[in-house]
Length: 244
Image (cartoon, rainbow, N blue to C red; front, side):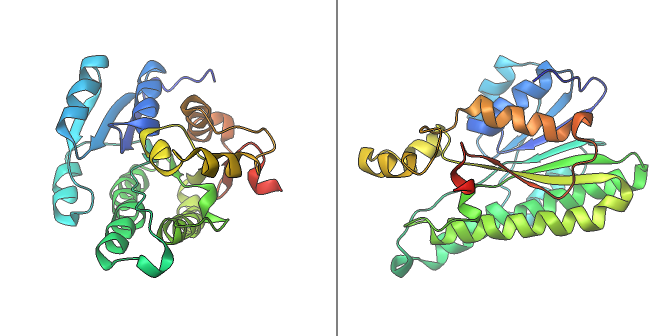
């Protein structure tokens, strides 16, 4: 999608790999000054090698204190993409406390904290802004062995709606993209079994999983002024899965 983010500053979490990395690079190509946040320094090093204009921030978003310290001096942010996520797949009867806490810390709590830090600045400047939270079709459909992941993404969808309600008067828009399986490393981890993948694809009218670029284009649209009256939506990028 053609969009210009010249003069804008964007922060992307989970920017080391997959959708987050591709989003950070796309925003930079479209003229934004990008702050890339992830917990793995090697991923940040390779990202900066690929695009020298990107500002790297290495922090574990499950650590509230470390995150606040790492982001307090990044400067004004106009665009935020909360993409960082983890998917610990366990049957419901085998869910463990550590995996439960990790998933909610990354997929929900970190979104609260990073969005607070960014939105406070947006409100204070009075310049508005746009926040996109990367959710999933799993927020609205039950998937085997995804009990905790589904729960975190359902929580994220509702969190995003409340953010849209409360931040909207300050001209800060908040939306989610809800992809089907995307062929990132995390997507391959969960759907490497051919029979499992076949079963899911059979429920997608387009008959395939999503490519990373297709999700990135949706994120760019929701960040841009081309979606200036869109606020509080969950946008499926799922080939029709949720429609059926």
